[in-house]
Length: 92
Image (tube, helix red, strand yellow):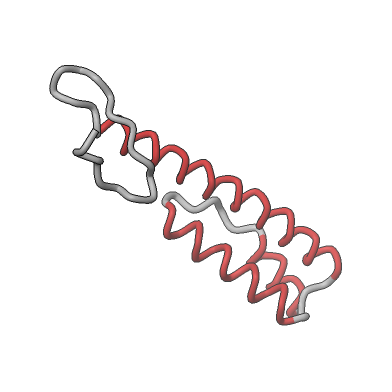
């Protein structure tokens, strides 16, 4: 009964951290690409992948806000720094 095994893989609990979310997404992609899932299991895996992707994006957005909060200046002002650079521009 490999289909039931695949269904069980698709319905695992939500990961607790970002790395585990990415690992779970990679597992779901591998399962979908394998072609071994039933149509129903494939749809379920796809839906789960969408939820995990949204969760990962939310975690990234939260991390960005935390980084911005950490860049608050000693006088209480917030220095806005693009998240991509991760280093404050001291020439302003």
